[in-house]
Image (cartoon, rainbow, N blue to C red; front, side, top):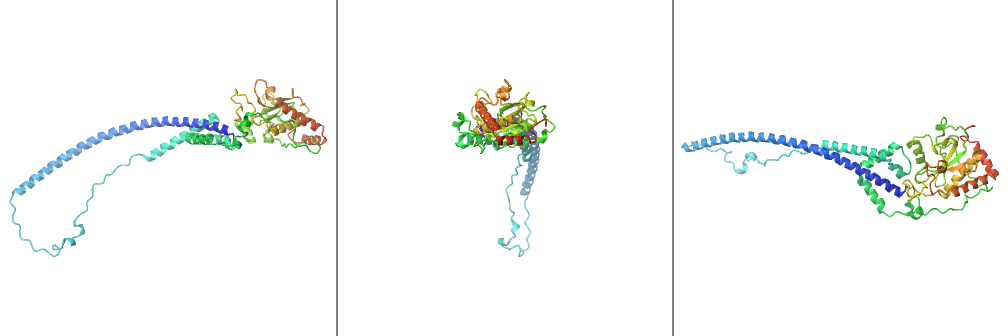
Length: 432
């Protein structure tokens, strides 16, 4: 599970960027509304002018109708003044004319209705939908740009595995463009609920602030011959064929440089590989990466030089302990608050790394068991350039473990047989 504090920090940044996108869209909508208001005002003015002309025409028609009505009234008055002649006797009524009122046809009286008021529909739903779509696309575009600038990758953060860079940035940009409200809801949920000890990855709060006790150098249970040999799987690392024509060594290595990855210990080995091959665009990285659970992952081919210590790559092997073990509070990238997981290598991690280094000393004659010249931390190999592998790395314990395995294997016939078999593997020696 990803580190809760790292998730909260990342979501806070995403919420802030969403707020920026919202403000930008509000400014755009404000200017658009002003333009629409101006257009509507012009339309109202034109409509008012047109209505005045219509009113004048209507008044003229009313005057004409009134004059005609006056003429009709005058005629009626003249007819009333003239005596009427006695009407002639009418013939007797027919049977139809003497019918009762109930027998009159239904259409004798006509149904009358009040005038129906017709209201013209106001608004332009199609134009409004188009405007909403354009604003949504603008928001997503702004979100993608901000996600790329700040290198925010929500999928990798939550899943702990790397996905293609463009896909993660696209998804994160859409989330940012969707508005800050959903992110704020998730933030309130994460910060307000009670987090269990198992969710405080990788340790509880107390363990995160208290350094792990240094245990005596007691590697895993010995084999029957007391050699302490454990198989190390190596088949050329990640994509060995991609280095067939590249990164060729001029000679066998004579130096080992050990590092920390300076990444969150919660992300996977694949995420580390993607950081080098996808994000950085390099051909390779460390020769070997040791995970917190003790898993050994060869990365670069051992017969090729890697990318881990600028200026020393061609003659060195690089091993990295996954995690951030720098705990000085004045360094903005340090892990003093445990936000990157483990603050020192785990015991099994340190033990596995020691076995790899001891094996390299046995495989390559130009590397001696010398921690002053041949086996160096990154910051010693390149003084003044880095703090790697961190201020909290247990150098003395690591040296003791490397020496322990090297000496045990040197004294064990079965271990020497295993090392001899290892020397026959492909991708070990550059000058074969």
